[in-house]
Amino acid sequence: TYFRDGTNSGANAGNSGPAVTVSPNGGNFVALDGDSSFQCGTGCKSPGASISQTVTGLTAGTRYDVSFFWAGTQLINRNGATTERLAVTFGGEQQSTNTVNVASGGFSGWMQSTLRFTATSASQALTFLSYGTPEGLPLVALLDGVSVTATVPEPTSWALVTAGLLGLGWTVRRRRTANAA
Image (cartoon, rainbow, N blue to C red):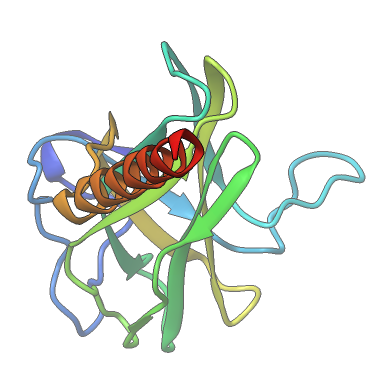
């Protein structure tokens, strides 16, 4: 489901909770239905709705941060507390957001998550899949503001690399001095 300009015609807390608010990124967002009983065709059973896109221009072995805004909510005509989370797959690696509890008719509020992945090729799929409980209810996770950026090593990592190189240099120099004597 796609929601334009932050409005919501179906994914709305509606019953007793607050309405879904515009995401911090503003504008459009999507709703992913995590109902594991969703039928995707004859003989096909899906663990829920996912959204996927191929990301190109990657460098194999480089670490990438996948950042996004997400929220848990329910369809306007549903009752009962649920849990929601997103499983994020980048290439062959999968990670999940924290699980959020959503009260009956509720909306979790928007959260920002950043997951770190290592690229294995120059082009790979980025997929978001909604999961939750209890089974058989439309468990809706909202998604907006997805970005993929190469990570920059932290200063402590650079300090460790520098210390290692200095130690290696000292060892080599010490051996050369010992061999010369």
